Length: 176
Image (cartoon, rainbow, N blue to C red; front, side, top):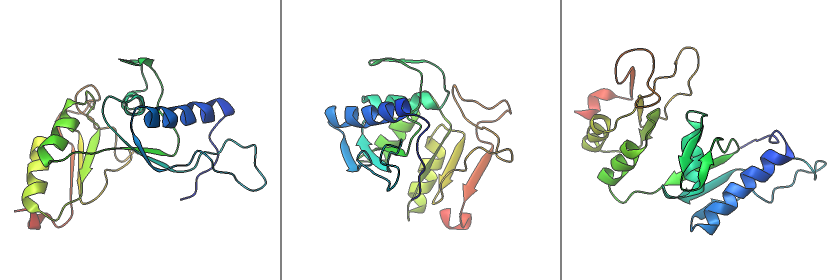
């Protein structure tokens, strides 16, 4: 993965602080980009790709949630008004499909989600039970671009009526 520098030293410090907070709160750092150095730019604002396994009570998750609206979000960690906005992926683990659906549905935002599965029954249950604007089944959801206008649910509801504006299926005939 190629990633350029983040915008400023303050942004780098904020991102590094969020990664550290995940570790301090019991999160697992699967890929740690905190100590990356780029030859010729040793004092640059670089943060390498980072993958964090977290849970919904952690500060790093709350920053991901607040980024969906870019407004203030009051949490147990105080007022969160920024997203991580760095090469950081926060992963939540669920032991069952129902638990995963519950995590998604308890989130007050509803932009989109995806599932990767070989089971048609699992795909159908997921598609039917999650409350989001965009669902990917065996493909990721698209990044909102002009041709895919923002299509959230709940507090991120699109201005176009309807719970789900676009369904994405690969070989949809296999789902039945």
